[in-house]
Length: 158
Image 1 (cartoon, helix red, strand yellow):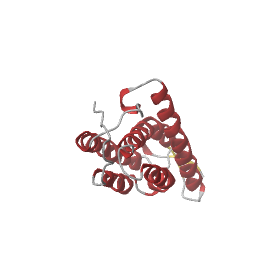
Image 2 (cartoon, helix red, strand yellow):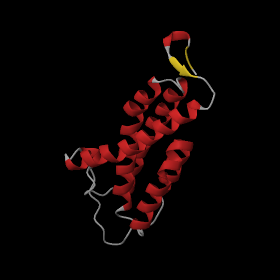
Image 3 (tube, rainbow, N blue to C red):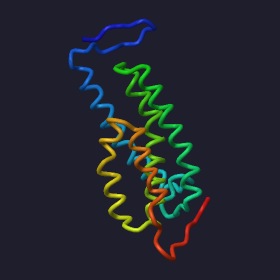
C-alpha cells in the first residue's frame, strides 16, 4: 500500500511490498558498483586504477575516508527507508562509495599472499555485506591491512 507521509514522501506500507523495494534497490546498487568500477578503470580515474597497488599506509588512509562515507550513506538511507526516493538516493550515495571500496580492496589484495582467494571471498560476500551491514563488511575488509604481503612486490602509491 502506498501513502503520502509528512513532508510529501511517498512511502510503502509494511505489508510486505517494502521488502521487494529493498531487494530491487540492493540489486541495482550491486550491479551498479561493478559498472562504475569498470568504467572508472577504463577511463583511468585515480581511485579506480586497478593496475596500481597500495601499501599499508595508503590503504589505511583511504579506508578511513571510505568508512566515513559508508557511515554517512547508512545514516542518510536509514532516514528515508522505504521511500521511492530511497532507490535514487542509494544510487547517488552508495554506489560511488562501494565501488571505490571494491577498487581499493582489489588494489590492496594484489600485493598480498593468496590474492585470488581474497578477491573471490570479498566479491562473494559483498552482497551479504551490502544488504545486511555495510559497516561490518567494511571492518572485515579492513583486516587486509594486517595480512602479510608477498616478498619482492613493488607498491605504487598515489
